[in-house]
Length: 460
Image 1 (cartoon, rainbow, N blue to C red):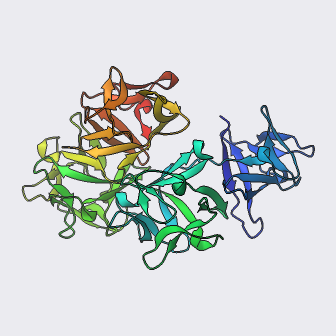
Image 2: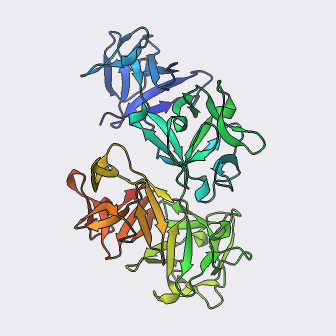
Image 3: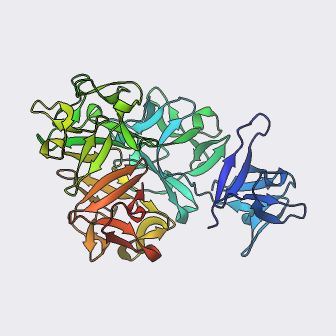
């Protein structure tokens, strides 16, 4: 691995614009008095301090100036060097952000989150909290386009610098990533920066300078889901008050719940759009009244072979759906009334990663999937009945089980899959035959038997 991690100093007043570079072995990159580049130190020192400057050619490439020597970090075919007084092509670096590509985008100036507009043709930056699929964006790295980025929305469109969304990604949809004081700025081909404009806070390019209005932070998007009760095929909702009830036919904000993992208890808290948590009441009922994650607000998710799940409450009993749709933690065993179907609402597009790399095509002309790729393929998620989803590529072709692996060549929905949430950023993908998609040696992407094996847990 040659990926370095950018670590910024918190003391901006003392050290403005200084970064450190740390390897995956937790060693710091440094330059000695002779200009030799080393990566051996466990501690940060004067030789490991770098300043970022941005290329003026519109590519957004970075030059890294070693503060102690005053020279720029460069590369030859076999080593790193730090001997150039001014940066040339050997000293400019294309930046591939190590952050998870699917994020919530928060404006530093407006202190609001970006979301898809109601007309679905613009991005507006005026949401107080990132709720639902409309606030999820994929920052697509385009290595073949000079290392620039495209902003991909949940309705499978790309942001044009003029503020409109379009189906095809072209030059007007590509932006260079710049780093300013710990935040991100996105610059278009005309060297203008994205920012929220006007009363609607429409995201588009206008300014040629960077202020707080042009700066953004990339926030991890917590999983948000909806649940359908097996008993009555209705969505669980808090639309009619504090009682958590399976009584709605469609999904909206009140039928979407954010799942927050408690690492000490290994259980989940379920948060509503009104900033309340599901909570076990004294009579066994489930109400959205908790304003903190106490023990009675934590639930275990128990996954079943038919694609359903059950919730185990703090009293050790399973949540059961009454005829009225109300949920009560009263059942001692798994039965029809304790089963629910799960949909990951704020992931209409998936990017999958394992220890070996991203899921992508074996080769550009081979539609078999592998999981050791340096760049990712985005996967469209189409919801079907009873928790089932179909997975589709941008080509319009669907995933199909091909022997032990997956090929993306079906013209219509072929094989369905169930998504099982295991950790805040990890899912298992189960086929209808009960087997799990897993990573095997040499990047093979295959169906395996064991869903508890770490090889079948995908970072998303």
